[in-house]
Length: 148
Length: 148
Length: 148
Length: 148
Image (tube, rainbow over all chains, first blue to last red; front, top):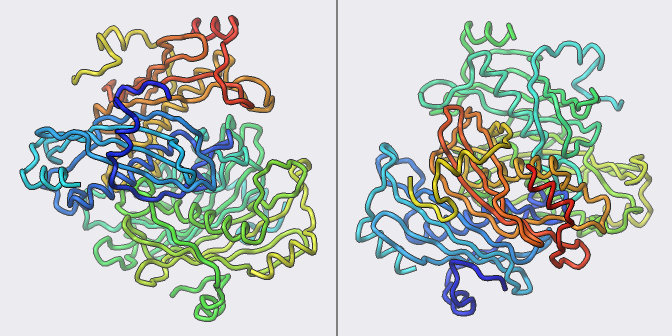
């Protein structure tokens, strides 16, 4: 496998994932090249990330507009193997790092034959929805995230 | 052309459109059958409808949660000619009917060769966002819509 | 419920569905109105329709470019209840009619509380992929479809 | 602005872009957070990249299955400013690097107020569609790409 700047040891890295959800690609997510379009990777990352954050009690329905919310600051994705319509994917997510106002999530996508299709990472920053400024996590939030 | 239940005379029907916007299909909107996916028709309808309603002053940014909003009650679409990546479309919209709490919009999609690709229609109902109940249009709104 | 031109008796109509698949709305399918966008209905119809046709052995991977393929001729959709992120949907499909070169499929979408969210229908026409002309179903295909 | 690992001097970097296309976000690309969903960045990258490769004569319609094609090997995206429905975007693309079988493209998204919304980069690898193996660019292709 090619060298990826956010993975040191691919075997060790893979073993650290404990949370995952199944994803079935939609026909509408294929493109005229005959496979699932590259943009779908980020749709799948988002689905897995939200379920992960929900489990930590950190996904808000935005009903309370004063509460801080985590937003996507950057995303990165490496394509290792094409995904096709009919594939049954497993989306793995893990917390890689947590700081004062932001955290890094790593992503792994495998197909039904346990083949590694996509790897990725991305930073989330917690902001105040009114000011748009980064806001420190509470100790409780840090604990919730670290426990996953 | 096959018989369509919302079109009496196709030539007359086509001539009644006076509002249109250009749409460029995205690569992501193609599918593995090599053409633009059938679901994109409704994405294009929505783009044209919103620009049409904006012109009539009826598209709200939902900042004022007490104001009535128009929602989609039904949609209907007939596919006459496949759309491909690289096509440059023109999306035509017209008001077909306006009642007390709802109106009907007709849609026409043509390609760069002036070929009829898609026809459609759909009803919008004005509702109170809090109660979800149909709300009569003001005389001013009716005028704005009828003038287009 | 409002009158729908493809449903005579809603209770009878609902009971006739025997095939369904679960669908989880994606976050990316929501829109700024806070609910699942109206265009997602047709993405879900397509998922259910393909699984239905696969069961009848009629969904081809297009590897054999000489075999006839079913394409979407028209689609119709009625929105009864908004769908939100977090809803777990069940997509029902049934064959309503089969002719010489085309068939009609009916659609029903229910949420986790067994509430009727969307109803729909659409015609598929079998065409020769080279000529684009309608092609009669074989007796075998008719049987496969009718058995579902 | 935060430090980005593919940009040394942001002013110099911005000035190097000479190719761009306009993009109008679709309503369907917004999400329930009220802005354009993060996955849309990659849809816009793709639109701009294809127009850029078309200009260099490198985007194939896949009619000739024996010709090498460029595929996406990785993508990276930094979000600087939220994008909203109604924004009119300009998508900038430039060639950053070209090797024997791959090249790197950089992306810049600005809104109607000339504000930097998104930056990004990604590697494309030219492969043989049959074998899936990397294939060297011809001298002609290299020239076409370098001239843009």
